[in-house]
Length: 386
Image 1: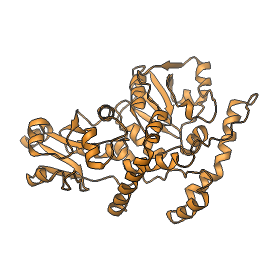
Image 2 (image 1 turned 180 degrees about the vertical axis):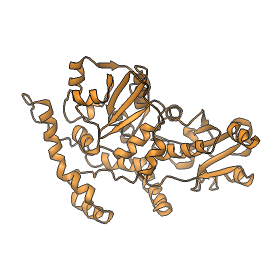
Image 3 (image 1 turned 90 degrees about the horizontal axis):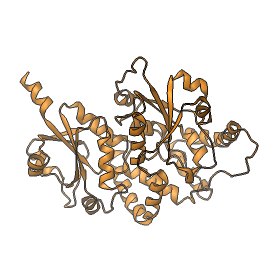
């Protein structure tokens, strides 16, 4: 019994940069949580990150900390922590008992294992690193997008007089062949495809390397109460940022149970054009599921929710944010016209104006520096994990 009490009361320190947060980061936090104890997360400072990795994060330390606080498995967050974790920092600053970190070796600016002192003291527990996702991979896809002449949206022909749904379906049809080709291509064919398409302003759809078994571990054990006021939101939630988090937080305040509809990859490319999405549907869903505000998600949610769809989900209110990615859209769509007609549509202000377009701009303004850094980091990751 005493051991169980000690386990429940111990503080586990997990740290990282957590830039362009993804399900790999969140899975490490989930694994630490399963060890039993209070999870304290250290968010490494911008300066320490730049010194160690050779490049400053895309998200500020405060933004990264806010995203980590939004994770359902986190109890406390310390901002601007050092990259190298000393025994003195662990005990006297973080006031934690042990450190949990991925089973990859983390090298500090000095060239040494940044947990060396902790390991020597026997206070280090490793968790399994999530293969198939990394900040470097996300940055690489963003760089690929921005250097592919990007904003080659689908032809914006005049659409006056066309039914909204038929407009959207026409754009879907334009993607069918490309989507099928990308899904059937193996890694051996990708190199050939890239050579053939490098002048066609084409960026392939993201590949899914997410284990299906992982979903069961991410799904919140939330039972919808009888007579619950169900809130519905939808979107791409691609390259998850503080704007997404605050929107989910604010939307949850409008009811008892929040359902998040997430568009599939083809829909995202239809409405935003090549080169979106940056992350696969499954990767985007896991990130949303890890946030403490989402009670359930719909994979491949319809871009234009019908009355039957909303009624089957017992939706009481559909919430839409005031700040959107309109600059990235291929056309103007009133996706929530049905909800408006039903009298259940509400627009909210989350208090955050940050959008995916802003993140794209941040990357674009530093693209040369990022490109060289990502190429080096991806090569290291490929050697270690593939």
